[in-house]
Image (cartoon, rainbow, N blue to C red; front, side, top):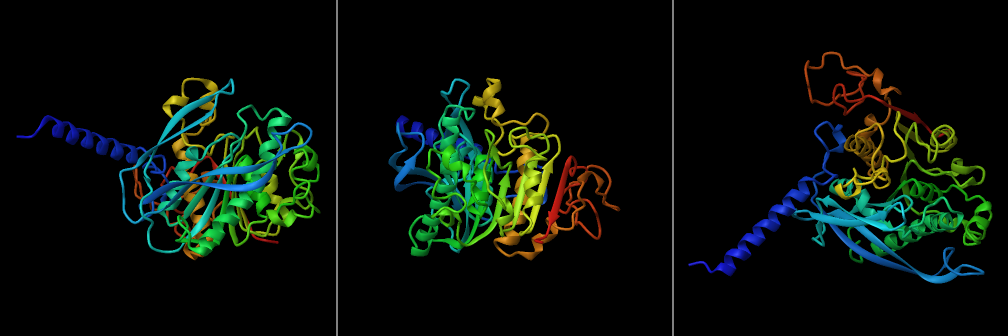
Length: 436
């Protein structure tokens, strides 16, 4: 005879397993059926772990009366990594500022297993930098997907002020801290990887990539070598004075062993203040992928991100444009908790594009780009070079009729972008320029 308490325990365990499996299935990192080829998950199960880093004696422009307070800067990291065994998934909990500045809580399904054993091997490092007042959990779609493909993805929670960036006082915080935090996290993780310290014992810091969205895009382009404008010294209450162009510590912002940079809707002007001094992004020598919507009214398109693409003359660079998309292209689709007000949903959703489509296409191109330049996988060049600029012009003569789900082989067989299904490469442009 089975005792009632045992029956209850078995039923509870089964319910938890069922919930975990459902969570993993609903994870945004798992692409939809109409996703391009390289958006598919990789061969590795995914683990996730949290870690705090502390950088002592840092100037904080948001604290202090007459001058910035000196405080220990604590950064919480979300780390996604290739795991040895698969688990049942997880449920991330996070929050974003509502219209009144108060946090609105939400959840995101994840396929990663917390604190599971890491896979054997040496995996490149990706530092992923979120936008103003965003959170790592809202970028889980990319962090988990890349981890499944053999990358260790580290995402700092930058603790931006909850008040809106429309005030100069609030803007001073992320403008000052983004490049400083990115440089610190990259250097510290690389140091721990060299020393074989957990959880970075299997991380290869000599192959590092930076990915940033919006304010994070400003941060990663700065960490790649774009010199800060001297005006930022005043705009940050002196915090960046030593790091601007010509400053004594300007070189300290540049991340070592950098192989690739992805800038999604990067900010180059904030509240009328220019982020970089001449030569700007032309100082960058690292291959760069820019991603933007043509109707981005937050950071601008042309002038704006497309301008940066043309200005970065000394590095191979790529530009993926989602025509008619706005600024909200990089966060996961709006969770149910964030669909109750216009303000909350607008963090996540685009006015024109399906969000699962936006992030699947970005995953495809980011995968090709990182594999090409970080892992030196030359086979991925065909996915990002030799493409016709306007996706709408692509054809695939001889492709099976009907709703065929196969992927285009690309040139010379087809001009339809390699890795895309028929009728699914539309509304985009992709441009490439070699280093000059």
